[in-house]
Structure formats: structure tokens, C-alpha cells
Length: 283
Image 1: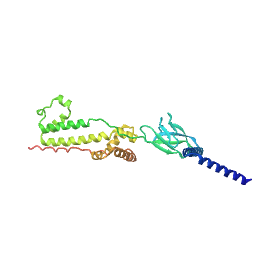
Image 2 (image 1 turned 135 degrees about the horizontal axis):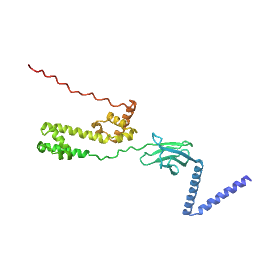
Image 3 (image 1 turned 90 degrees about the vertical axis):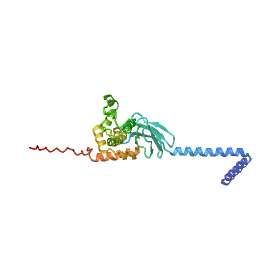
Image 4 (image 1 turned 180 degrees about the vertical axis):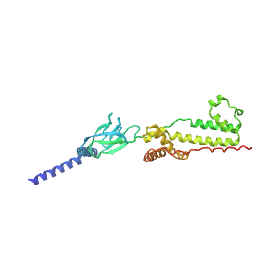
């Protein structure tokens, strides 16, 4: 009986093969395409059944704080699922072990994690630190200082040594001109002063209170001012650093600042003018 069954199966295969040979090339191509599609469909269904999906719960925080982040985009890169965090920073998303999740929100760096647990996950997102452009009067000051230098070069004397009150109010740098005088020596002194003033303006333009507060998290104005005075970089450093170098410098300096107990910078030695010796009167 077994032999008869095998013979019947063999005869069916021969019949199928004969029928297939009777197909033309186009029909056989369609048959192969349907056959491959059926295999892929079965494989996909089998893989989906083996995923053992579950609903993952989690909370999104700002890194280094307990601040919860709302409206964070949460995307499952494996199966294409997507959701967002609610006002409390919580989310729920269907996924499986081994899936990759992407967290994205404006002003924060993208965060990717691998699902390796079915427990509630805590996701900490790093805030982007972007140094916004600040429009200051640095260029205007440079132009004003250059204007005074042009006065030195062209006239040598400003207002015949008698500046008006109105001109001093409208252009305070005129007072500097008259303070330093109009001679060549005074011009050199003014040039040194102008260069130093412009350098400090550039340092203050980038090393700001707002920058220090954003990076360190300090809110106490007194502590911020103490930090700025203690760790104010030089003009040469500011000139050589890009924004990321400056951010790293503030972070390193703040670590040192905390390690030293947030102590103020050492006070400068007091300078006292020597007392004049009394002049003896001749008899």
C-alpha cells in the first residue's frame, strides 16, 4: 500500500511537470513570481509571530535634571511605529526586544536606544548648546576708536584743545582723545589703550553671563559673576577657540570652581602711594 501511495505521488509530480512544460515561458515566469511571493509572505508572518511584541512604557527627561520633556517624537526604527510623549514626558509604544528606538525633539540631540527590557525605561536627552549670535557695539566701538586715531593722524589737535560739552556727550571717545592729548607719545598710549579695550570687548562678547548660566546651570548672579571674574579667558585664547572649545573650557572651569568650594578669585594686592617725606624748612 505504501508503494502504491509513493507511485501515486510520483505520477502526480510527473503530471505537474508535464503540465508545467506545456506552459509557455510567460506563464512559467508568473508561476515563479507567485511562488516566491508566497514564500516571502510566509517568512514575514513567521518573523512577526516570533517578535513577541509588547507595549513599552517610558519617560523622557532632560539630561542631568528631573525635568520631563513633552512632545518628544518616539519612533520605532524596526517596524515604523511612532508616537510622542505627553505633557508628563511619558510614552507608550508597541515594540519587541532588540528593536531600535529614536527620540527626537527641537533643541535636543537625537537619542537612540536598543530595547533590551520590558520594564519602564528612562530616557535622558542632551540639550543642544548653541551660541546665538549677539549684536553688540563692538564694530561701532572699533570704528569710533579708529576715528580718534584718524584725528591723531590728520590734525593732531582736537577742537583746538577745547572740546564742547555737546561733543563729549554725543561721542564719549572724544573725551579720551583730549585725555591722552595730541602729541605722538600720547597717540601711542591711546593706540595701546584702544587695542586692549577692543580685545576685552571681544572676550566679553563671547564669554557672557548668559553662556555661563546655560552651561553650568548657575542661577545665583553673585556666583556667576564670581566665576566669570575667576575664569575669564585671555584674548589669545578667545581668538584661537571655536564655540565648542569655549563650551568645553567653561565645563572644565566649572568643575574646578566646584572643587574649590566656589571660592572667589584671589584679591589683588592693594596699592598704596608712597607718602611724601616732609620737607625741612631751612632756618
